[in-house]
Length: 194
Image (cartoon, rainbow, N blue to C red):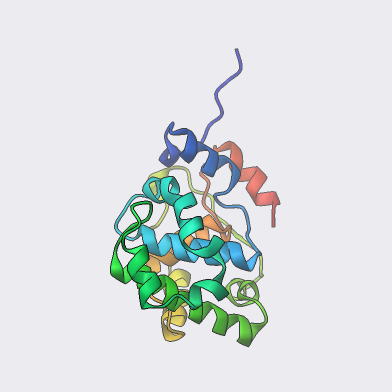
């Protein structure tokens, strides 16, 4: 009988969560639209569990123009009101409005740096993911000094829902840091994907 793969315990046994852990979490992302998707979803997640947002991800994709920041930046008051009636997403006015605000800020960063990817990854001294070596879930921090630095810069640029905890979750999701625990089967695989 094959041995069960060792995973980070936070993903539990929910198939959606396991698939996210096994296929996405911690893999370095350099595609601007995917980076925008995670900014939007991480902001929506504030105060909620990530599995709640994963279950709503496809509804978010539909509601927010397939995570196209150009289209989201054009959402007006009428579109926002319509989104607040959509049961498929988190219907929090501040979060929905922040998605539009963040799309505009995202486009401004792209204009200044060429790509959002170039901007966000420039915070890493080597330009490569930080390879942490946590033995257990309890060792993984909720935020770091680097996340605080990035958070301050994002806020200065007009982004909302980008506190250091949300920024650190974004860094984990997009592979800026590899926080798979040492004995997780994905740690080594993700570590190679720089």
